[in-house]
Image (spheres, helix red, strand yellow):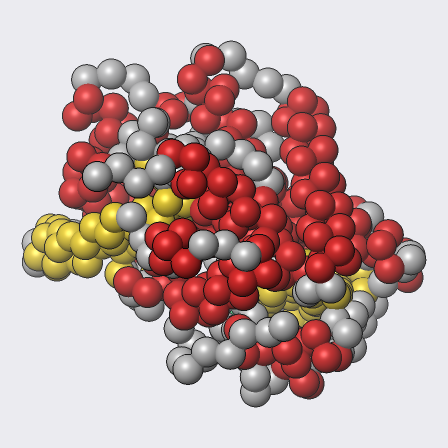
Length: 420
Ligand code: NAD
């Protein structure tokens, strides 16, 4: 079975359509489905911020908590110009299902600020961040809602976040946010976690399909935290990375991209442009390359009903959240593409965020090896559980992952009952 939605580019509708299918296959009660289809709490704030030139700009910020049935809400904060409420709602719900798929004791939340972080100075970013934290302060905290980085945000922003929250609460509260620098209670292995999880899923998919990594190629859309680390991790298993991109376009080299050189270039330039280790291609051309593994690791809705039929990859590992629209699911299924869905493929990040939260609460820190081994076990088991569910129910990996996650959330929601 595959979903179809009216507005293909609305990720919240896409989430609900897939949830409906998974719920139907699980035989969930209609009351429960209507609870799971909606978000528990949605906060919208207007934030006047003094810019460096003395002018005042009013920024719009969101924090959405989709579910706290299994634990505190958990999910990143996105700084981008196209952030909007339905996107944040979808991202929050995906966090709920993702945390349940890997069975970490969190619900789902997400936040966003409508801004262009690349055009703002460091001090402007700091003022926006501190104002945002103050605006949502009453609804977050280590036991309520624990944010993390996402597109356009990083460890420095998480450090300001933790500092603002701690200052207002007159306490040292590192467990209020994850993805922090190590010196502030961050976890070893967190920066690499999402990309490493992508690599583990790709490795398991290849094993499942009987393919040899050393004979495989991959194209990666995006070269931020998830894209670049995925590229390095996949390359470390012998897979040849032939293409990578950023928002302005991609780079293709059939002999393999010089990732170390590219990384050095991007540290200085902050963009792919100007690196001359291959031919320039567009982001659309990158998606349609003849590669074994495609890793969309940038943003939503890049594989749609319009281009899905033109893809050549045998495997898609969704580093990004929501890169495939609901209407493209059937086309990929019919083509026999093995899709590792976002709520499994990029769950390495939240898994190590969970470890960070645990370490902060204990004030007892683990070695990188401990983090990596625990994370690998969770990712490998979750991959196996998803594929098993898909085979037992004759469903796609995506609907199987939803079934796995939704069933766990439905269980706690049912057991807790409806408080009235
Ligand atoms: P990032 O800001 O570090 O990098 C984003 C990358 O995507 C950049 O290379 C940027 O140039 C590119 N990009 C942005 N818009 C694009 C567009 N329209 N077309 C093509 N490329 C575009 O962000 P990130 O943390 O790497 O996150 C990427 C994706 O992974 C997002 O969907 C995010 O929600 C998801 N994700 C991130 C994490 C994490 O730990 N950072 C965890 C799970 C999921």
